[in-house]
Length: 253
Image 1: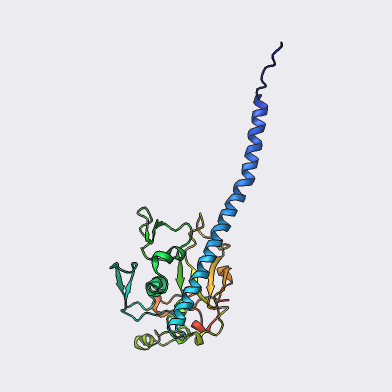
Image 2 (image 1 turned 180 degrees about the vertical axis):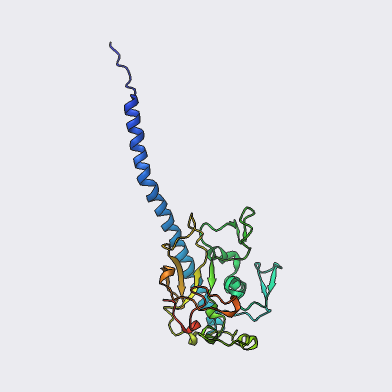
């Protein structure tokens, strides 16, 4: 009986196969990367919706008043039963430290993982802490979603000509009520300040997730947002979605 020799790839066939695989990878890798990015964006939107529910629970418990901390108030920056605390005279400390007011409404061990983006450099099981290899410029207890200054002071602070006296300015650091919000579907309550799910530095064409005061969550381009108004307490500059002209009574889009 005559045996047939097994067919072996020629160099040409092998090169053609490699070229085809390279083309397929060139097509699939961007598609897979896009799908992964979209999945992470979906998680971020879901996280912000859950934050919106928590804020509504807080508002309902505290007579339709948004989260507020007096200057110098002690804030607990660890889950209940642990001791790390913070006290600051900075009027907008809740921009980052708002979770400190949520221990009873949303215990950290169950909820904090939804206050950070996918890709955030956090400790597994303790998402309020940074991984040991995280950049040193980032602090613990720093959620991905920042709380707008407009809900931590009276609208007069965000007028074109606010008071110049420090004493007068301090009197405007007062709680904001739901009745102060004129355009709830157009006013940012919290916004994604970090976008850690991106695998590169953010670009102007990258939208960010924003939670509106009415509980809706949208992806928005910064260039389409209302320019912020300079605020005396942050060195005469303004933060988009936070230092809104008119404060809680203004519009971010």
